[in-house]
Length: 317
Image 1 (cartoon, rainbow, N blue to C red):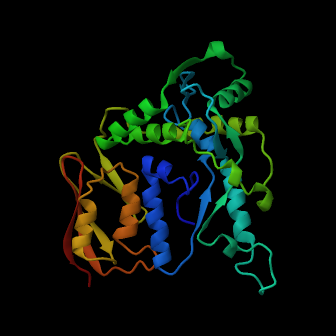
Image 2 (cartoon, one colour):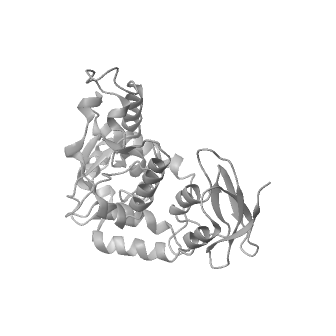
Image 3 (cartoon, one colour):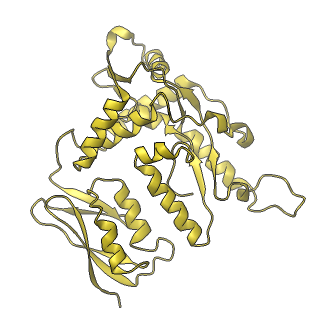
């Protein structure tokens, strides 16, 4: 199950617009090239995580009691709680791998090979979420400052930040795009909840769980809009690498797949360090995540303008 817990993988334009679709598609293709099978989990946004994750996601700032509503707040998204996603994944993996014989029509893990499993907890809009928040917190409209923002303008603003290397704009573009009235992230018609025996959940219970997550997620600070961190970083093979503002750190990258020319070409795309696609590209292009057997080494450096550079360092011994 590659890391593509998101909306409908068949909503291609939505994936392109949010930047995550092409990377997820490439990962699935890589799995198939290796002779393996994949199962995508199409669950929509994680409801509790998104509610707790700050103004850039579902629009809520619980400390300031402010809410940004996309357009009129009426566009619905299919969303899932973290618990519901866990139940769905566990259920799929609990089935036998293959049918016993040609007459066996029961569900198996292979039923989802190279397909998506679809699930949801709720199909909601921001207005409905706001009503739930007020019930759970015991607040009223008078306790909140509510503003409205055009989804397309918000998306364009987030994308502009990302293009400048400021990934604080990613959440804005991701969530606002999912609430486009003409093409929202809504895969309710494909949900397989009944097939998987998933329970019905109560919106207010999930909202309560989300609000309880607020303080936990605040421990993972994101850069403020328009700012740049003094230290920049990447994660590689589970280790966090940083660079000082004035002294780039060299990281030797285990590489097993293509030649150096392909490696350099990939990084001519100049992804910034905070771009979430960087991790996926590193994993997909620069080392074999399955065998983990290095054959070549490449030097990875960060230039002062926050760009990524790959150079052929040496062959491993």
